[in-house]
Length: 220
Image 1 (cartoon, rainbow, N blue to C red):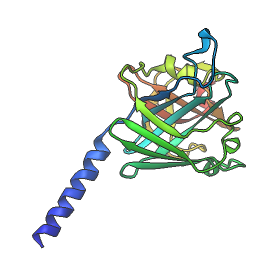
Image 2: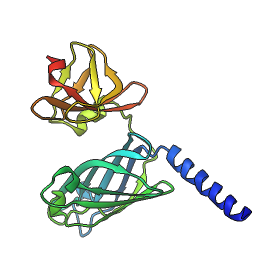
Image 3: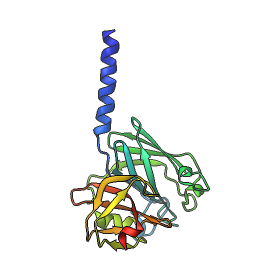
Image 4: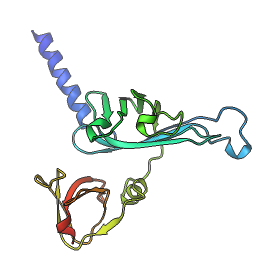
């Protein structure tokens, strides 16, 4: 009985430790190109970058960019939300009303995240022969995760300067308010929108990742 109790305590402790760990950061891989590339292309082989930002608990926002490199430079990119259960997570874009299933499996060990595709590259919107599979190691030198970095990820999203204090909501209908506000003068990104509301993401000066919906009537 004591052994069972001790095992249960250890399991709870292990889960707690995992939940407290913050895996936010940039992970990547790169290889030399195959064949005989010109001197200017010798360092431009297959590569991939995975960025993670902690949301709540074990939930993370991710951005994934991969390329085949020389000679055709086909690329692929996708982003979404994943939740780690122990050391694994899954992304399935059909939950976001996508027409074709892009399913990716994530597994984290030490400072490496392994991604395995469960669907074709075409389903994920990648270029010909591009896939997400690989071992992404945490970069020794990390970028500064701020709004300038976020703007590069959403390069086509317009910026809006708020004229008033604005409430942030959890849902696209703005029925469920969060305990977070944007103060007057904050510059936010219009990432996506529906008829009445707008989704945005923001990184505070102390590195907190804010995300959610705001009412369009609040920003007029």
